[in-house]
Image (cartoon, rainbow, N blue to C red):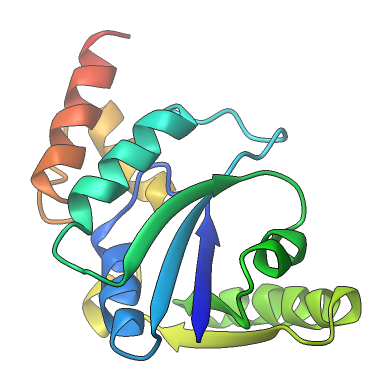
Length: 159
């Protein structure tokens, strides 16, 4: 079965990678789908995020990285995926994600949403937290991979 893990991944964190690695053991193929969201202004371009993620998952033979825009369920239908993957950190994530899962089910009854709880060590972690720390020159090496940390520091030094 094909599973899609959609998100903006701006940037991808160790929490995201934990979900990807664990889901790669559960599904035949996992597609990390980088969303182009017109309501957000990303730090990194969609192309940069694809490159970053591809470097991070190169050791996982059944993981692909792709981009999409529009409705996630339409992208899933095009890719013949049966599952949408979502990571849960805290209770507020569950409320939002459950609402989205129900909405997606009304758009395409064949799609299932699988929730994976983050491991305890990443339960606080978000891309926003990482960007905030990096913006002020703090170390993010324990929150993202080395290539992402380097890209963050380079980006903020040039601002």
